[in-house]
Length: 208
Image (cartoon, rainbow, N blue to C red; front, side, top):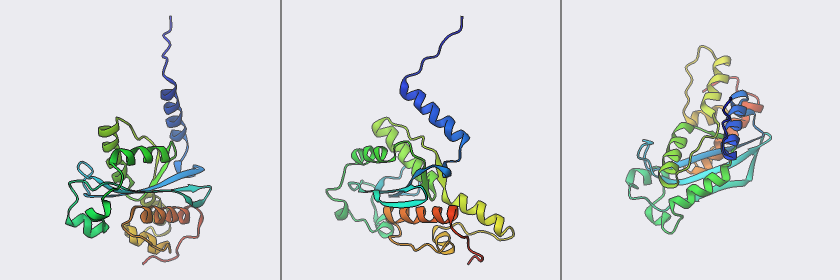
């Protein structure tokens, strides 16, 4: 007699999504969410979230009207180095949202859409840790890393050139204006524009 494995509906849904993205490139998705975090540290094991920026990319267009821009109550780990980089002081974060509420809003905004980002593995690692510890939730969305996409495209065009994968260099070479650098929503929008240029636009003939 064969045993029947019965999974709850949400587990079947998760399995089907994973199977779909195993077979399809998430960069081809009709909708993606460009995501960026500003944090107190570059160590994902201890970084606390200061702000979150996310914006939708739909059918090859940046949809600025569908974005998420949230500040988090100042964590104890906020120090002078973080303030120097992100320009977010304790006074700026006073009265802002508790982290648990920010996490809930991020999960709701993202849904099951693929995530797009620069150095996205860091942002996802930080989000995963906080979601697991505070809300008992997982984050398994497929991901598109813009620096990896840039490297694949440019290494074919310039096979003998050492490629500089720093954020500002990518934006400059792709002729993307940088606005709001080191703000979560600014970096999320710039990343989305770099992605669109790599996917649909003309690529540079020379690199600086």
